[in-house]
Image 1 (cartoon, rainbow, N blue to C red):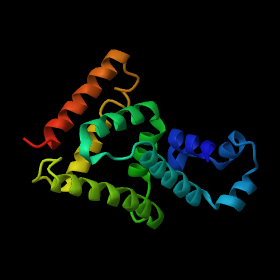
Image 2 (image 1 turned 90 degrees about the vertical axis):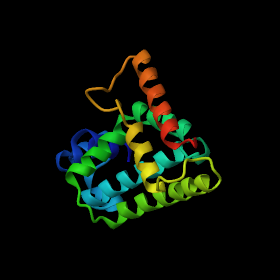
Image 3 (image 1 turned 90 degrees about the horizontal axis):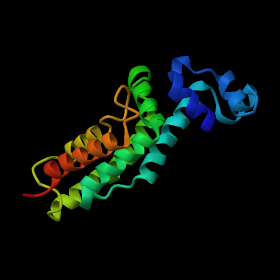
Length: 175
């Protein structure tokens, strides 16, 4: 799976080659097809696992959305394959993929519920729908983590992170 993730992140679905994945994984192509299915099934497994790995690595803390945004920013900055896979998915993949749609739905439902609950408790500003809160936090968290802004100096990384955390604080914190 690690070899497939690396190959898909680097080349996208269309450019990825199962031969290269097999060579990097020290196995043969037929074993990949036998255990994981065709290239489409392999992509779906890689992308779905990337979603669940991200949710597990950076669990939402709806009571601290600014902190959550900062942790997401760090995660995306430290693992460029996450965003690369997402960008390739946005560019190349069909939008009616049940396996991936289900992975996204499972990841999103819990976050939206946590945000709605935090709003009800007065921890997040009311008046912004939970899905918009999540969208804004996710979009801000990817700022400057993709080329050409990627590979920031430590000082610039810290400044961008601080600005993202502050922006999310201003958007989400009650007055």
